[in-house]
Length: 93
Image (cartoon, rainbow, N blue to C red; front, side):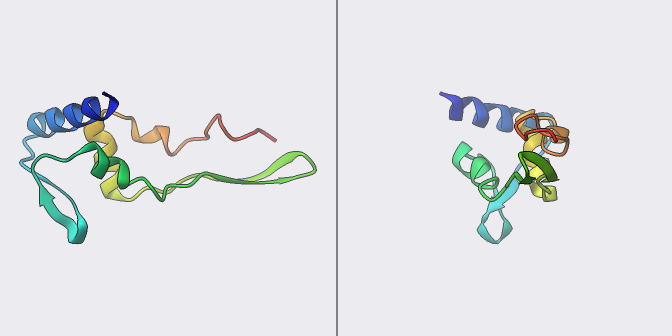
């Protein structure tokens, strides 16, 4: 069910933005009806890391997104800054 909602949101926003297709297939080939699997797959290597020493967080490494990932988030209705600000999941120092 969640995948269907993701697909619907992306496809509806493509129509609103007058995008006939997006380049989501390998080799940046175009796709007119992206699936949730393809959209989510583009985020499979996004990582959140931090270094701890003495029980305290010393350094946080937030994800750096590609332009395509930013575009996909926008189409999915997810604020891009949710991936680029300090995540609450990271323990604070």
